[in-house]
Image (cartoon, rainbow, N blue to C red):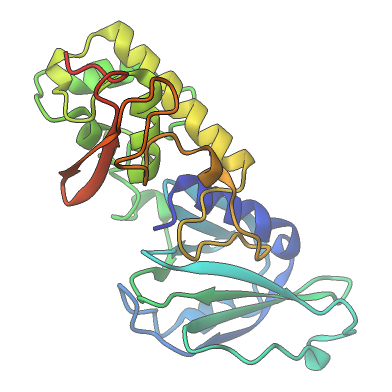
Length: 286
């Protein structure tokens, strides 16, 4: 599933090709995603200039003057940018034939006549393409916690949110109301770096260890973004290139293999139905 680094990589990949261009065409081949694509989406988009491409948690937000196009990549979704720099106008731009899972094309044209297309692909159809008149009041966004790479996220924030709770720390940092965008891969990796067992109750973690955990979350996510995300199955960024952070994974997907630091065989447990891998020597359970 695309996590925050993969979504941020996608945002950076599509941004320079579509910002400040107008939507000239919208082709919707499948409206039945996680939530149905609105019937009036063509009316909302065609002829409108894209002002910015932002990200909130794992949502991509394409900002227009009158509202926001929200895109979620779901379990297996991706966006690709298709370009035809030789075409002089929208009428001459021929898109490659869509594949079975290419559900939406958004075609843009710049003031110079250059045309580009963002193609949304989603084999499992668990993503979303929605229109928001007021993103600040959207039920998808309003209850989200702070961005992990922002100044609002810190060990103090985690310590305060953990007060009076006894949930396992891995579940805690994957709660979007606590902090957004820390998915399964990066939760495993951050907890390993912080030396904390994933099933340790947050009630047993003090301020100093929360400070370290917040630092490790920031480090892991920042490094993953620089590497273009993690390619485990079929993720590619907006430019069609895979991410390379998989080569730096210390624990995720390495159950039964030796720990890179101490050589201890890594253990795997299931937490909330997700694979959770840790080192019983390097990660403390108290």
